[in-house]
Length: 164
Image 1 (spheres, rainbow, N blue to C red):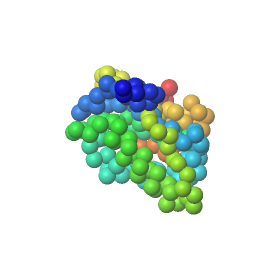
Image 2: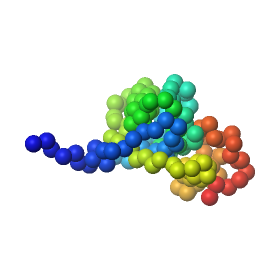
Image 3: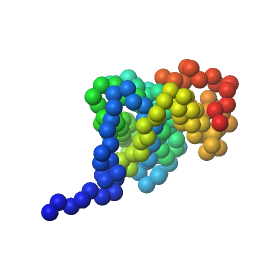
């Protein structure tokens, strides 16, 4: 008799990734270690996260790299799933970080959390939520001051306008 899925695998059962859908995604560093508090590691990750090759069938609408996790709004394009998109992102960031560090420690915890957004109004609110993470964590005073951020929506969000 087959063993039922448990834990993260059970949570993913029944999930569908849809072309054109925007997902709010969070993935966490291994054991919540503040790996990206190190500027060199954050720069290496930023290079990957900003590269079009990281997003061949998706678009990063807004994202922020925090010391111990990453939040992003990802719009899927084509047939690729959220899981495959995150697998590529995590793999590429891991390779980039390992090139600058002497030890080969794990970078990410297994899995991620995602939430499909329902409408265009929610997209702007979600982008504001994502970008305001460093402010809520008291790492900077304004989202535009945080260096480890990106996405296609940044140009449309006024830096003078508070997000919270």
